[in-house]
View (spheres, rainbow, N blue to C red):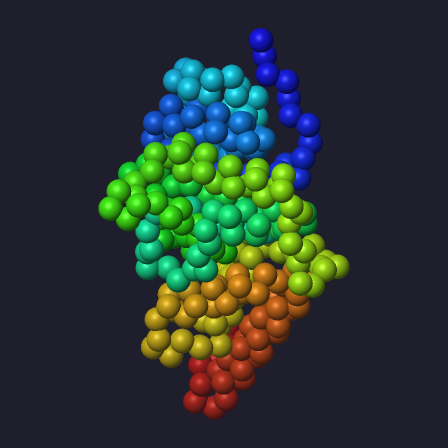
Length: 265
């Protein structure tokens, strides 16, 4: 007997994103874990094999989740519309991120989901999320497993987080944001566009002067992700960057036009 589709809930803006999943059975098991907790939005990034009979078999009836799953060839489009992205990581890496327990993450995600799409990322079975993938997250989620045997199966990790989300949704309303936003929060795609613009502007004004551009950009990325700017604030920041680039071009042209400088073409 087919399972009836779920009623719309506050969890509808929450997307589970599986990155680089190697075993199709894990996709099916994750879909089953999601569906039992009322989560239906699944996004897959570079799965090794999907769709696949093993995924369908281990979904155990959660076919609606698999059928509606979106498949992407990179992480960026999978989270482009999300304004809060948390990554589930079993261990600390070389990326400084705010770290949440599953219950804390559930509160953060549910509160943010009231304003638009949010995402919870899970990495590949063997390696987890890479540093580059974590760079695109606002924070990390760590399950407090036994430190002497902390390796969780992918579907088990999805189940733990899905249960935390459902329990939070059923027991209490998400904590309201300290400041009610009048503007929509910036999405991941908008923030990535800003970071690319910031990189160009810093080069244009010769900011680095021998310092590592990667280190500077990583720190600035963390700063702006913590600040969670809205769309209007991001437009203002990009306007400032555009003016900085314009002034750098004018200064360069004036220097080239001075006697002894290179003639302008």
